[in-house]
Length: 211
Image 1 (cartoon, rainbow, N blue to C red):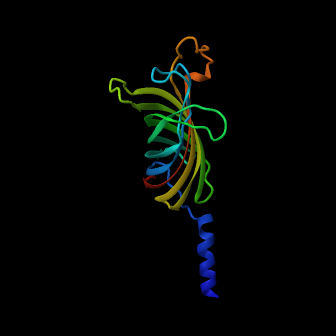
Image 2: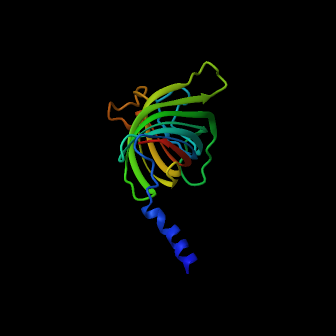
Image 3: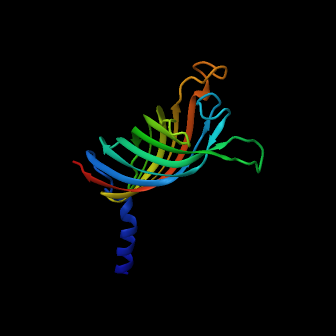
């Protein structure tokens, strides 16, 4: 009976134990997941004459975060995906030839609102950063391009201990490519000026310090 009571107390402890990172703590984590690329609209670049898609591939990176208050966290993120540009074609079972390799590297700063429920901490946030698009073509004179981007994320942390945990996250991003070449551009409201992408990642982190 005593053994059963002790085991039950261990199961119930996470709901009441203060197993969250403290305000002022610094969090360092690594992550991996899937990158879902968007579309490079016609007229956004000189490499392809028509519309081209960016393929889905793996993505990885790391983040450094500071828990400023119990509710607010600021985060710096680095992520990279080695994917490819494929020819656009409609219909089912269509052929999508590889046009070029593409390395996508992202540096972002995020502000996140956290809701703490025991060991569980869902959050959402917004941020901005730089997206670097490095295309792999035989013509070495073609250079990579860094563009400003906006992002929004949502996810959750689960604390195994106050200093160790795991998180899952979804993030959407839009990188501004600038006005498209004539006659394709439709002014400042033209959605084709933006390269949009989606990521789903999971990772593990440590949290140190705090007050």
